[in-house]
Length: 62
Image (cartoon, rainbow, N blue to C red; front, side, top):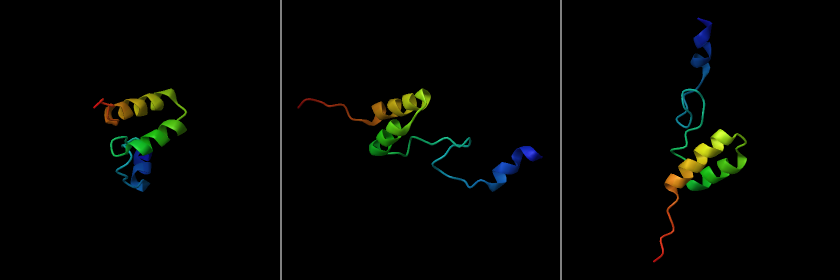
């Protein structure tokens, strides 16, 4: 019974996953860049870098 007590008190936040990690999908490029600079763990930096590479438009010469 003690295992689920925290779940009753936690607010449901659409920007967080079930485990409390931030969702990268709704963030824009500026927010992702800021998160990349402030992140200390290599795993998080890799996730943010991967998401930025999906979003940032490639420079196409005209």
